[in-house]
Image (cartoon, rainbow, N blue to C red):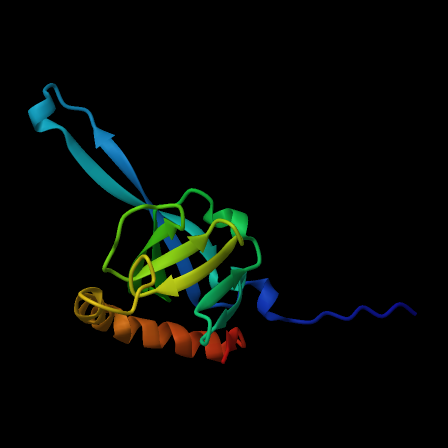
Length: 155
């Protein structure tokens, strides 16, 4: 007698979270003045690629981080609802952003959420960054709650 055992796990694609990025497509026109661009979103991966998120360090660990290579922006969805959009910023950048970002630490090869880049919490940056964070906060809270439900949240 041969027995087969099957089990279901989060690895089988059960996450309701999914992530997209964008690609600009140039529409061909006869003159430069008429040049237009169209944005298409491209599916990257589901929440099953998220190993964990650490609330204290703001780090997110991906099972297959190579899927994040060379993407400029991350659209985060829960089912069909867009939760928020983050710019992906490598630590080698020499400019500031006051919008929520996903920071890629190029020396440690790790990803961190931030209210802006660089991750400064002082001076003139605080007010603008707090205002911008409040705009994505409802979606962020849904994201965190879903990570908790899926067992991917660390505190």
